[in-house]
Amino acid sequence: MILYHVSPERNTANIQAHGVDPTLSEGARQVSWWVAREKLTWAIAHVSARHDLSARHIDVHTANIKAFGQVSRFATRGVFTSKCVVRPDRVLPASAYLQGAE
Image 1 (cartoon, rainbow, N blue to C red):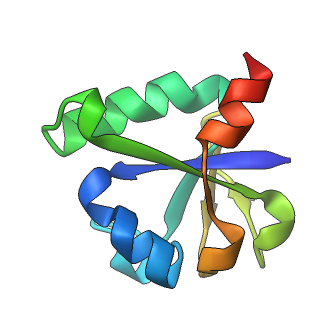
Image 2 (cartoon, rainbow, N blue to C red; image 1 turned 180 degrees about the vertical axis):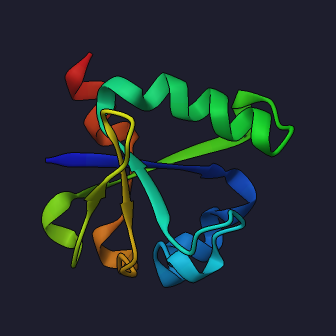
């Protein structure tokens, strides 16, 4: 299963260098947040509002669920969390997956 991580574009260089690290989360929980494709629009709007950014300053990254040590479903369908670092070689820009799916 392919999951998507939505983040302000200012985090992209760090994600490319170090992966998605849940210890860098700015939320109350030290987890990384991931969504299924059907929640992608919601996630972009959520991150945009939370960080007071326009959607054009949001980047979407993707990883196959096999790249995770453990993924937990959140209460909302299609939303997942992980306490594991997803290595940079396992995280890709979402465009490759989204172009083929539309």
